[in-house]
Image 1 (spheres, one colour):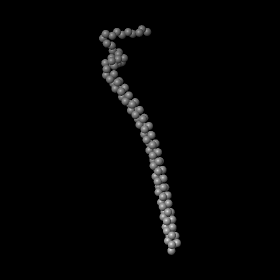
Image 2 (cartoon, rainbow, N blue to C red):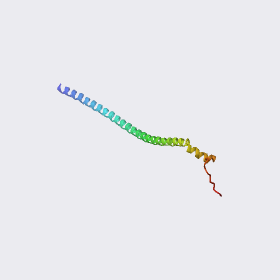
Image 3 (cartoon, helix red, strand yellow):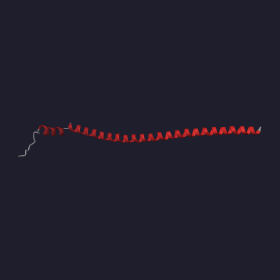
Image 4 (tube, helix red, strand yellow):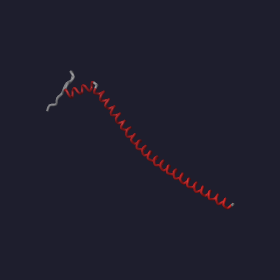
Length: 108
């Protein structure tokens, strides 16, 4: 009877051992697949982050350019409201002069 008990025990232990090894292989496979997916997703997120940083830099550069343009427009608007601009325009476009100005014409 001792032989049958030992043989039965060995069969149960080897069956358990095979089941444990199969379970460990399955777990290892699942963990490996999850790791691979996480690495792939991490890489794709890194690529997106780099693209967004590049886009942000371009947009910031464009914002600076537009701010400078806005300042130039404001400066021009202020200049166009000044007396200096009105005098210059009146002289160039309308040919007007001040009362005490002398006009010299070139002879041809």
